[in-house]
Length: 318
Image (tube, rainbow, N blue to C red):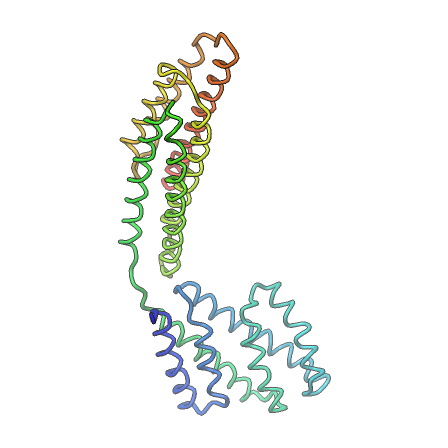
């Protein structure tokens, strides 16, 4: 049985919350521990957001409960009216995660048949201790930036290999099916790497930076584009001379693909190749025309592939 870091943090933070609540002599002290259990999340930012939303939620809940308990008394009917208004308002205000916790605390007012300031303070202290212990527990998070940088290198190596194989596979119909499987595997790896990048960035409270997440999003778009190119390659039956320029572009990109490459040089090569295609003689028969059209479509997809990276590079330099 594997015990994760989040479980360990929760097991430490919840008892501390209970002890603090008992030390302060708070009523229903166990609620502080439960709030801690529910508030320890996977990242610093999400825990901080949860903590804030729950304090806001308790404020809203207390105000609505005070209204209906004052009008109708401390009974089930008033509690039902409270829920009828509190739940949709919470959802509208994007603090729905506080519905259950706040409502449990509101039942303390109901059980005591009181809205005395001391009892309201008691509920706020329970909430503050609970979410505070969760926040402190999540101050430590392992630094995963090294892993993310390694993921970047793996993605770039895999993309280079795939581009080189695509270049070699021009007019080799039997090889494309295998490349499609490799492309799908690469897409899955990038998806997982992007999740790790998001978690890393969610743990940077004071210096938010979505670079890694956006980087892997860019690579995912490129790999989707590569998958589209492979679908065209399966049908392509161009002559070696017709495919030569695209073959050279693939090889050049495979050699120069890197995180810091702005894509401008390859875009210039693409424009030069495009101009040469425009002045070539028209195909003489239908089959040659269809192959020329597929070749041109493949060329356009490849241009899109490069422009995705060029656009990403422009955005991060702004």
